[in-house]
Amino acid sequence: MESLGEKLKSAREQKGFTFDQIARDTNIARRYLEALEAEDFSQFPGEPYLLGFLRNYGDYLGLDSQDLISAYRTIKIQEQPIPVEQLLKKAPPSPKLIGGIVAAVVLAAGAAGLFFILGKPSGAEPQADAPQRKVQQYALESGFIEKRLYEGDSVSVSLGAEKYKIGVGSLGDALTLTGPGGSSRFELGQEGAIDLTGDGVSDLRVFVADLFKNDPSKGVSLRLEIMQTGAAAAAAGPAAAAAEKTPAEAAAPETSSSGPIIFSSPNPYPFTLQATFKGYCMFRWESDRKDREERYFHKAETLNIQAQNGIRLWLSNASAVKIVAIGGGKTVDLELGGSGEVVVSDVKWVKDEDGRFKLTTVRLD
Image 1 (tube, rainbow, N blue to C red):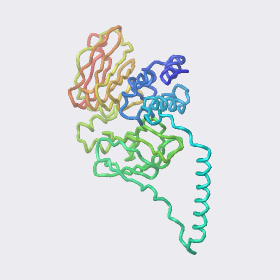
Image 2: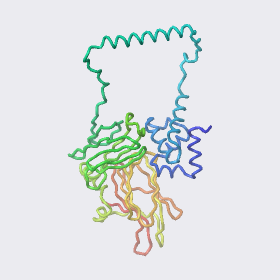
Image 3: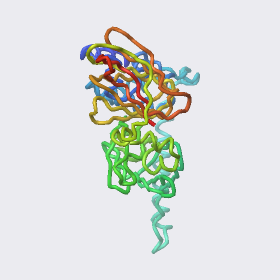
Image 4: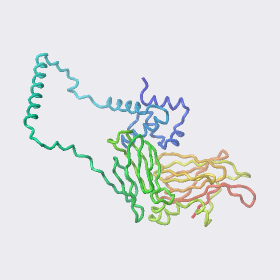
């Protein structure tokens, strides 16, 4: 019988998927995918994260996530020591003793029923139900918050001088969050963003770490993080707001400084930027003037961006990511900024006075 790790590995290899491909599609770091297949559960920060990643990985591979969870539970049970008293064999009770116990239970039940009927005063009020769980309210002033929330719970998010309320609407096969702009739906293991201010820019990043589908009593494990955009960027200062400029806004002043030549060629050719993250970093990119993408990356995650003409990058912390340019059979390290520095930069082909093209970095201020 295949173990948990073998099931995951077999399904992945049958579909021809690589860890890097799955990491890009599921937003699960490669090290966690490898740890699941190796059954090395010590790599996870907590069991809610492990279960969330396992469900998401299983769904991606087309496996029954509930079977995978059961296999994980079996492994954990096997790792627990068996109490010594359970190993000691006890003699079975005699038939006479069993009969006596049954008779005593029947008599006790009859006496209790008679006492209830005769002793209950007329018009007595029914016993009160068990106390219900109180709805909780939390506050997110800055940074992020990780909590297990239940239906009705809410979080007050501060953006500058304004506060916005996010509530847990329902917990079914997915999570529904209610906010100023309406409802948003998130599935297990999904990472997304919410626009609280209504200005078309995302303000709050949401990650669903753990969710028991159609079982609201167990709640949902959520990570909510304020993004340095919109009102939050204005409150954080000019440096953070600069990172949030649209491509047109960032390019408008053209008070830019070109960096060293990365590649040189008579004609531009496709190139790739490979980013390896050394710490937490909000990272945005736009390839060949197409739709902008953004994600919150964790340590050891990687990202490959391909382009024909150029790529625009936004980094919340330049020292948290190592970037190399790959093209024409060469690999060159890029230096985009210093520790803690917010950077907006283009990596693009530029035609020089001699008619040749050079791939260079252009810092946008």
